View 1 (cartoon, helix red, strand yellow):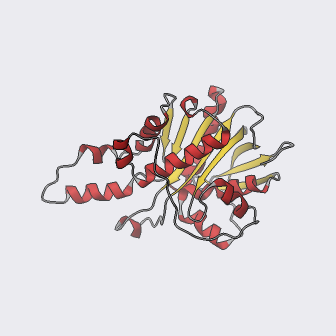
View 2 (view 1 turned 180 degrees about the vertical axis):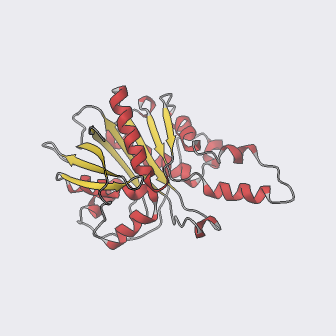
View 3 (view 1 turned 120 degrees about the horizontal axis):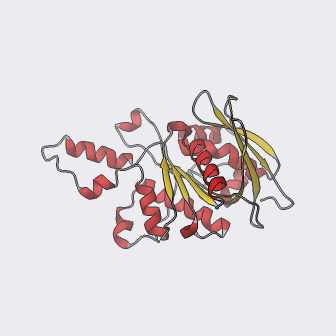
Amino acid sequence: MSHTLTAWIEGVGLIAPGLPDWATAAHVLAGRTPYAPAPSVLPAPALLPPAERRRASRIVRVALASGLAAIEHAGADARRLPAVLSASTADCHNCVALCETLASDDPRVSPTRFHNSLHNTPAGYWGIATGSMAPSQSLCAYDGSFSAGLLEALVEAASSHTPTLLIAYDAEHPAPLFAFRPIPDAAGIGLVLSPEPTPQSLAQISVELTDAPATLLADPALEALRLAIPALRGLPLLQLLASGTPGRAHLDYLAPLSLAVSLTFGPAPC
């Protein structure tokens, strides 16, 4: 990479197994509280109309919850922010159900089930829930999806001169897909990124491509979590943020490349 991308982190949202929110996770990642594994608890998508609320899958719910948490933390207006949504796969529960239907004696597919199978379905639900008419993008880069989303959000913020929301998320895979892609639970990370510092800014983030190996987490349980759910390849970045001290981490991207992420703090770190 010939130059460095820079922005300011304005808000964070996190839902992960044993890490129900950013406030809890910050204490765990900073080593102030021990990590206690537990299934992810996904809040009901209260902003959706009743019909859409009933149809919202776990992958939609984790995307909405982590994005809305970041928006609330930043004190931002979701209706005005471009959004980048990035996931390693789509709704695999729905995918399995579609395949079972197609292999049955009655292969007629429900239109509702079909449109919920698309990779950009969470982006559609995001627009419905928030009323946002701002642009959104939906990305997929396998285990590098968090880094791909982060790069895209940083470019969007810099080119549009507008704060931009990143939502990186994944949900568990059911059998038989789990045997080939054993993602055990749902998790999501939301970041509001501003092209300019504000009184709300938590830290300045600078990103460039490198070929250094990805940073491992010292806690074996947290490292296992980082590897188990692709969206959580961003945990080393959140650990830097939780520490409140300047530092650098490397995040998985598209091999042999990784993403070198540096954080610096002003007089009032998070």
